[in-house]
Amino acid sequence: MSFQITIEDTGEQYACSETKHVLAGMQQLGKKGIPVGCRSGGCGVCKVRVLEGEYASKKMSRDHVTAEEEAEGVVLACRIFPQSNIRLSVIGKLNKAVNR
Amino acid sequence: MAMTGILRPGHVQLRVLDMEESLNHYVENMGLLETDRDDQGRVYLKCWDEQDKFSLVLEPSDRSGMDHMAFKVATEEDLSRFESNIKNFGIETTRVAAGELNGCGERVRFTAPAGHTFELYAEKEQVGNGISTTNPAPWRRDLKGMEVIRFDHCLLYGDNFDENVKFFKEALEFQLTEQIVDGDLQIAAFLTCSTKAHDIAFIRSEESGKLHHASFLLGSWEEVLKAADIISMEDIPHETGPTRHGLTRGKTIYFFDPSGNRNEVFAEDSYVYPDSPVLTWNADNVGQAIFYHSRELVDSFMGVTS
Ligand code: FES
Ligand SMILES: [Fe+2]
Image 1 (cartoon, rainbow over the protein chains, first blue to last red):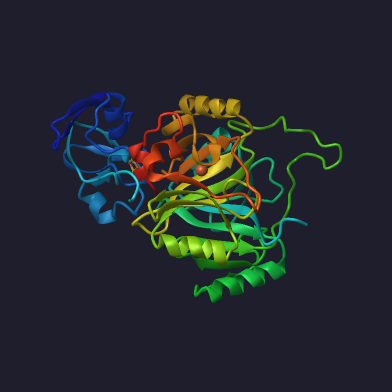
Image 2: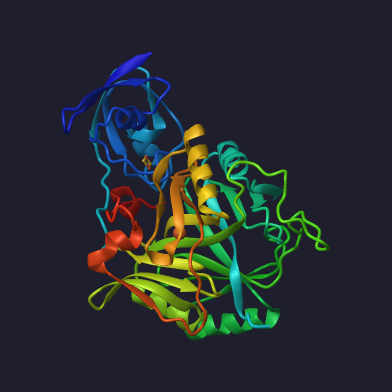
């Protein structure tokens, strides 16, 4: 089953299967709204706030998401699997290029 | 004996979020061999051609990243000598008891200026590489996945960059092999304790103590391509490659473990001797220094650590 994901910041929308994490769903369709890093819950660049919608989640590194944040829907997009349509806003950032 | 002091990267301990997924990655997909477990839930792994009992320790955790990287020194005297070098540099050391890691002797532990924990040790149980030492076969027939040969190096991001490089050169007696410079500012430093192109590398960063990647050796470009096939077959998060680095000339591919720790497998890089000149890449050529063919930096490669 597939659900509609809406990225508030860019207005981008895409369909994501319940078997794929929200970041994989985005990447697969060539969309760019959420920064992509490790895709395994370890680097924190895909951090988002879920504004609306249900999801299942996998363990995410506590360096990037505290238990309190997770309880409020602040999560890593690469660790959540949609169970309804989802509306989210982006928190994570990629540090660009070398430090010079 | 030509090689003395610090001999090689002995092991890296990585924090993992899910042990089962991690073992599937490192054992089934990359081809490391499990050698032990302990009562803290840590799992010990080695690459097939290593003699010592382990070169990778996976530690169950609620965070990702590197717990520590350890180097093997030649003798107990070296261990004491480096311990006092480190103290004289103004950095505190502690001793970790023999056996705290299964099969590993006493370790000298310290935090380098860039914020990473390192350890030195002189003893580790040798279990062999599974090949007879008399009339040895060239390879083993029972290996899985990418068949990584050895744990080779880590690339780390950290602050206090200049002090950190000075520490590695002066207190730990590493040799600078290659660097990226922006005018007077060193942005990247590749350092060796042996004749390898690097045993460790650092990138200047505002963050302290981050892991960029842990790297494992393969035998050939063909094996790098086979690794790329496995990455796709097994749906492993892929980042860049197969390609060539300008720095070190290595032929390489990057991907992530199931906790978001970046891995590299590579082959056919260069080498140095103590009298080799330092190779310098200018910041204007940073794209080529890192990815020799595309000559373009990859955002996630530059910006993502664990
Ligand atoms: S992409 Fe690294 S935590 Fe999601
Ligand atoms: Fe590397």
